[in-house]
Image (cartoon, rainbow, N blue to C red; front, side, top):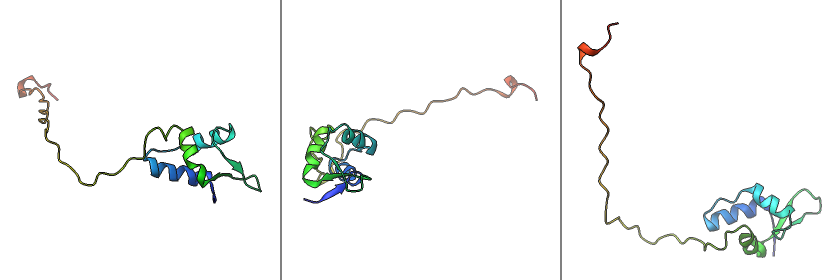
Length: 100
């Protein structure tokens, strides 16, 4: 499979699992050899094999939560809580105000 850069892998996982994946977290996991990653030929970038994205998700704790499926239709809530009343301020008469 094709190799993709680490920031692109973070973006794909964020989209798939609808949870932000911080680049710094993925970078530290790659350095610590927690996720399957390798350096490119110039040693400037971390590369992830596309087939290892699920392993990366498991290592970062994302695979335990299944990818969220978007609901087909929106449902309205059955119960709608009553609105809270606005707090009232005590009124002061003109006589109790300090003179300017």
